[in-house]
Length: 460
Figure 1 (cartoon, rainbow, N blue to C red):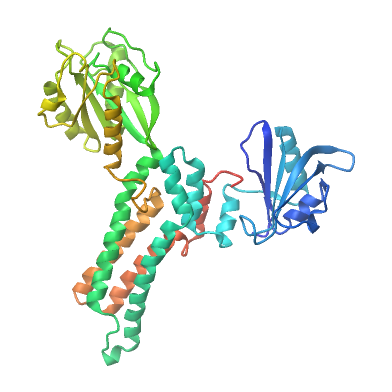
Figure 2: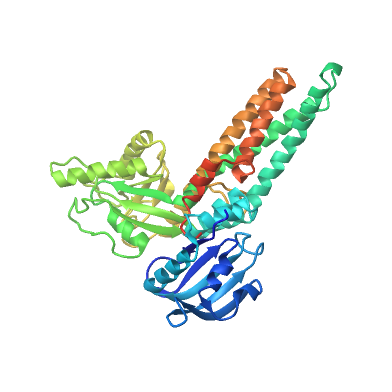
């Protein structure tokens, strides 16, 4: 924490501009030794200065802009400085080496953010949200990260902890008056509090499924008999000819994948080989891969023929419904949906009476594709409104801590109902409080911090 750290904050590779960051008590003094321009030690915080970085008075490395941040008015709450230089990797390496020679050291991954956390700039949940914000690829992922970074989730957890602390303090106060047999904590109110908080946390736990979908995307396997229109559907959804379309059965031998953003959720579509018995070795491998992708998928689109005629290879929706039910049992983790294709030829979905959810489309004519996209979104989010759904967790560490909190609260409730001593109840509540505190970093260990910040990029 006493070292002055340095790192390239922009991506590696040549570009117009590169940004080099330093943080630490001596950061301004170090840069001043190689900067020719305004005397940086006399510069105000949040000021920008033009000058040159030089190896010596004669040898100029680059013309730069230097921005000063004086403690505690910086990201890390330490003296910090940012050098904007030209994006040549040669220039960047030379400036880094020059400042390393002056006494700085290379920052570890996430070390700037770790210092910001340790110096009280934000809590641990907010720090993790910074990494999520950097990696956000959709509007929904951005919304979750920005809410958490601004502290709404942390405030929610601190409110829960505060309510529990109030009652556990009363229970522990009773221990000091054990011989006088007095009660400061109303047992009925405590039970109601524990149950209310447990339900609240259970709601947060339930939100993880949606949060994980937003963060990692939704894998969708497009499966069915040969020539059902799987590749045509993929191409229609993506708006480009990604997959080869042919009237010859068995054209698709491998898995073809691409992504599509639907209302802020990323869907990863996987076009697979037609499902049938075959002696063709390569096609057989394709069928095996199709089954593997069904295992990975969160949604399985089982395509069938909604047209007028059915040959031996193709299935009517009613025949496909039986197969879809088998797949639903085989892949219980996924939502299996029938997609009746070629409705430009026949099929009235209004009369559908099968057991599996069905969407009727024409991939060739692009009929009902918007309805299919809306259905995919609803299945993925389970109809939740992302704008008004409150806190959504997407971090596995947070999920595990909340699950442990729930178990501790259940133990407290059971011990309270069983009439056990307040010592046992207080111990369980204290455990629940500790698990909540671990999320925000009010209670943390070096191992946890090292693991979290090691996932950040260098320079952040």
